[in-house]
Length: 140
Ligand code: ATP
Image (cartoon, rainbow, N blue to C red):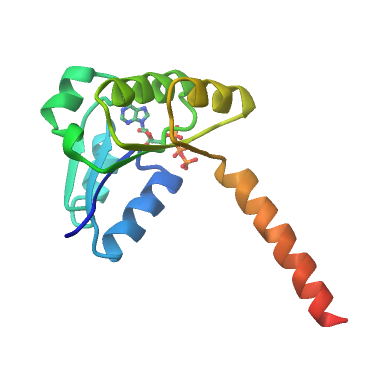
């Protein structure tokens, strides 16, 4: 059975997750409150909708409750990211991954029930540093 995902926020990070999951054959519901972003993903995701993810009624109407894993990729607007996470935990979503903007944001996300918190820039920086070290070791 195909797993179902929702990606909220279609910026560079959320957009890349949405593309990758779709290319891997997953069912993806793409959500953004910006019409242009949603149009960009109309032919990529299984469904792409314009919606404000902080609005619980709208999220319920979208049937988000039935989705296995929701990724919240709203970075700059920390308030919207936190509120969206609260809406999702209240709706009982099984797995919620959220992009954090800074350590304070991460702390709050963990407290309100995010299952996984990621810092894309920091995590990628670490990974690249380790890659540089291992390739230097191989070079000697
Ligand atoms: P990235 O760092 O991944 O490139 P970005 O800088 O393009 O992200 P962000 O401000 O982090 O943009 O927001 C990511 C996306 O989330 C944007 O496309 C924005 O329209 C969307 N977004 C912000 N608030 C909401 C909301 N309340 N509901 C739905 N989408 C939202």
